[in-house]
Image 1: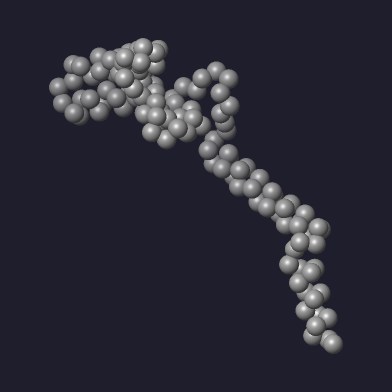
Image 2 (image 1 turned 90 degrees about the horizontal axis):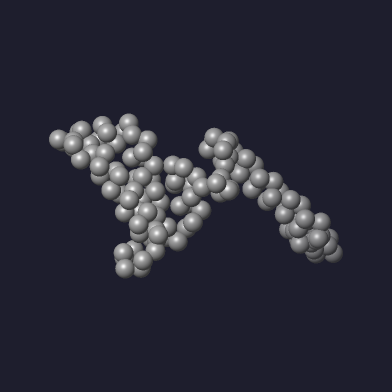
Length: 126
């Protein structure tokens, strides 16, 4: 993003980056920087905001961008259940959808079972 675009995003991202920079300005080594960043919630919020912005610019994926944020915007449709529970429910829903589609296909006569077997049976008998 170019600052000449004159939008609020540049100002917000610049402020976030500067805030993180101020948090680590007195660190004497990379180990000190890593220590400060590992215990600072403000640094995590800022860095994940920057990472999410870069990801969205690179991929255009807004859902992934929202998922990356340390703080979700009000009104964002995000899961609050643990990831394993969401994954389990998603897998179950996909399996059930596929099962229903197979059942619907068989009812409509498009399945391999009814039309395929009947034709072979008649040909074999006579």
